[in-house]
Length: 124
Image (cartoon, rainbow, N blue to C red):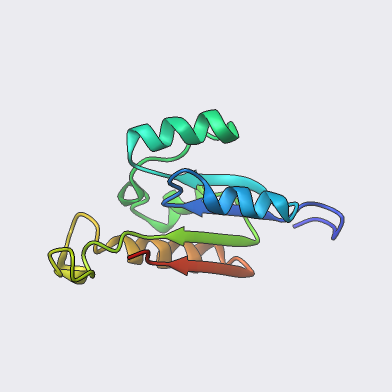
């Protein structure tokens, strides 16, 4: 994916306000894809970084759709939702079809795109 003089490329899933984006740009990274389904956060991400974030990761429903829509990248970051797993939430875990299954979408992207590095957090 280019020479060592080029910036590394990163994907920012569950992008929120872009904390990972800011940090990785400071390290000379270049954001090539972001996903955020909350409309207000998605709009702010566009204003702050010029990136039109993908909405719902559930729309990446097959390996082919992932391959066509998620660019190659070196680093994947994902701060996936904690509510399904948190004691403060309903504790449905992976049975929560709205948010609990999103971890598996991250796994699918990692499997298809195979970045060199990834950072996963589940904020609580």
